[in-house]
Amino acid sequence: MLQLVRVKGSSYRYHVVRSDGLPDEPLTAFIEEQRHCLAEGSVSLYARELLAFLNWSQSDPIAVRNAWTALGSTAEVRQLVRQYLTVAASCKVAMRPDQLGLKVGYVNETSGTHINTRAFLCALRRFYDFLIERSDYTEANPLAVTGYYTVPAMPRCARSPDATPCRRPVG
Image (cartoon, rainbow, N blue to C red):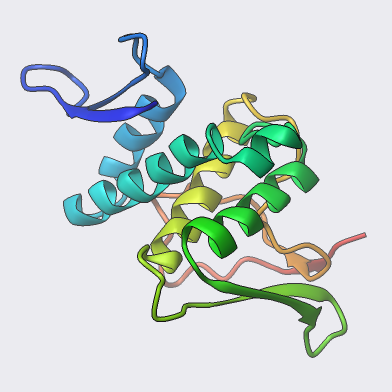
């Protein structure tokens, strides 16, 4: 079980602590980086949604039975996210081709949805980008759209409105 702890007098405002009392360094570093990119309210929202997903993933019977983990293969993580959205968050997820014929997942909130799905998906995508950048996750980002265009890497916190990077086809 992961917990978010606010620590006064530390160089990191928030610490993510595991159930054994030790800090989770990648999550703590991720949340600290977000503090430099996002508004304070967004940081706490992202952290709350991300930790809820990670805690749920360790106890969901189907995820445990299938050995899906948040640091598993891209396909496993996608299954885990789909399971979380449909079971824990009570969303409806539909997989169908988009206008270009690529298979895409559409998430629809229901009256029983109790998470901020946009914040959750944004936080998760940013988290995997962060892990990939640090070489803590060696797979492709499970939430990245593939088959469209790639944009040359830009610093996540320094995107300027006048920057128009060239787009090039994937593959």
